[in-house]
Amino acid sequence: MREQTHIPTATSSLQTRETPRMTIVLRPVSQTGATHARRMLGRRAVRLAAFVLIVAVSGCASHPDATTAVPAGDRPGATNGASDVVQAPATGPRAAAVVPAGLPVPADPVLPPAPDEALSLDQAVQRAAMDLFASVPPAVRTGRERRLLVIDPLVDGATGGQTGATRSMQRSLAAYVEDRQHEYELRPLDTAALNQAPLVLVGSVRGVGRSGLAPGIPEAYRIWFSLADLRSGMVVGHGMAWARPDTVDQTPTAFFRDSPAWLVDARTQGYLRTCLSKVGAPVDPAYLDGILAAALAADGVQAYEGGQYEEALELFQSSRRLPGGDQLDVLNGLHLVYGKLGRPGDAEAAFSELVDFGLRHERLAMKMLFKPSSTAYWHDPASGGRYDMWLRQIARRTEPSGKCLELVGHTSPTGPLALNEKLSHARAETVRVGLAKHVLSVGEEATTRGAGSTENLVGTGADDASDALDRRVEFRPFVCPDTGREAGASESRSAS
Image (cartoon, rainbow, N blue to C red):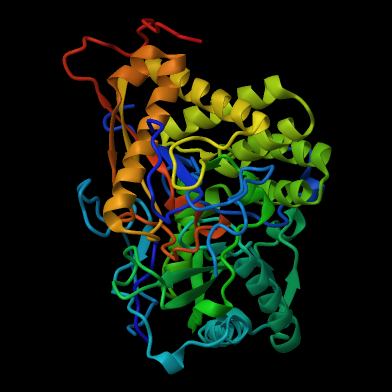
């Protein structure tokens, strides 16, 4: 097996097949107990490292939906992976193919396998699970009592969220443990289980193309499982396998589809580093620090997706109060449930905290629907009002920082490269105009450019909800040149 992980404006109309969404990311250049213990820790969603409010853009889609999800029907029709983890190196803005900075990747290259090595997703889960448990040292799995084991919600290694594939993998993995690993007692991830210092199983799945983890259409998907021992603080098991692309459903689950913001924070980095770690390596401290809060947030995710909004609100609020509770899922969750509960003022206040969170993590973005092959937003009164609020808060929270913004547009790989570059630039320009509507100085001092599809995260070219992050606009703050602006300046010339 071989190893290298895939990480994966103006109102003119441009004729290209690139589609529905664009993500906006804000990245500063220089700068800047819980009462619900009974439910704690069901499942937890993790996110990638650097906050991005995803401005989804509609390119080829024919119909927008009522949420921020990409419309359906957007377009017709081996090295050992148990290697040490390194941070993806920062690359210049014109790099042809880059892995986002801050995203954990294996030290050794990960290249696609021979065709006969890739299995169906379910078979690959079984193979990786067999390798995982076979690698556990005898001292860990022998004793008079069965070792307690919990599964921390599996994640997509390119986005850090939960998808159809990760949910399917988790169900298969739980069945495998119960049917074939009788030395372990599988329990839900909750407070009672954590108090007994269990083994925690983490896992991710990520596409690998011809260039490895750099942007490109995945030729196979790599699965990583690791077993973290909370007694010793060490990784005690590791397993890997390859899955065929046609068996991997990358559609985000409802919470991650609806979330306006996407973050790669320290917690998510820690989770992914642990997935990639060798047996005998220490469990990443960032993963351990927020495990309780993240588990509560995961329960909130489940409550949200089940329509239990009051319960979800209490869970997210409880998670926020815990040490390590300053997490993207928690902030996204608060914003979403306030909206569902008909509390627009609280929803906007929660969104402003998302913007601040993104600024602290040197990146920001949001999901917005554009018309097919156009820079005009879909005509949807509800969505239009939400987008206007998002831009208002981004402009107002950015202005006091004293920074200017470089807005970089992105597209999926669908369609001609040159036209996608123009479309991504034009959509970034549309966002700049929207910012200027609320704080004129922020919009006037922003710069824009288009990256096309050279920095994709998912890379499939599906042009639907599964690769919405590939159609984004990044906000990269920098010190304003020759303006004399300082943090805290109040020269807002607001047009709203």
